[in-house]
Image (tube, rainbow, N blue to C red; front, side, top):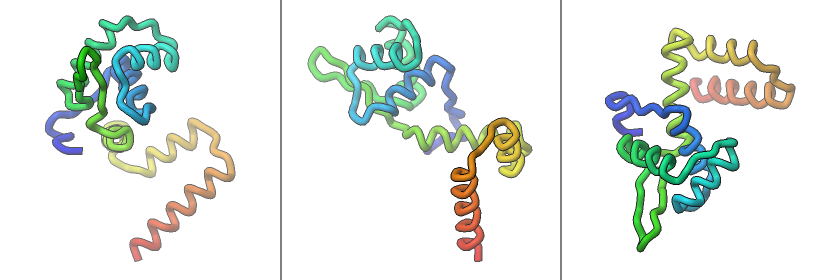
Amino acid sequence: MQDWEEEKKTLTACETFVMKSVWNQEEDYNIQELVDAVNREYGRDYKRSTVVNFLIRLSDKGFVKIRHKGRMAFIHPLITEQEYTREMLKEQKRFWFQGKASHLVASLLEAEEIDKEERDVIRRMLNELDEDAD
């Protein structure tokens, strides 16, 4: 993600609902489809004008591009969900966990039960990191 550190791109809670809906869609949304998706997926009751205001802010922050085709406007993400979540996790790790991944993982393990299958996946990932380091 370019210029992340310089701009500290963060989303408000409402912007997060909008972006998550944009990321969940495989193709560009038109605005009314986006309004319907946000309201349906997140139990909101946003009006079109409210979502348009969020989109303008998201565009100003560099998260989306608003493309006009005739009388329709379509929303295209400029930042992937993976890029955003990766940067947010890095920021959370630095701020809340003294920059230590082990502290972040320990907190996650304390907060939520992780089943055997998921633990096995995590072990394999750690083993692969060890192998790559050798």
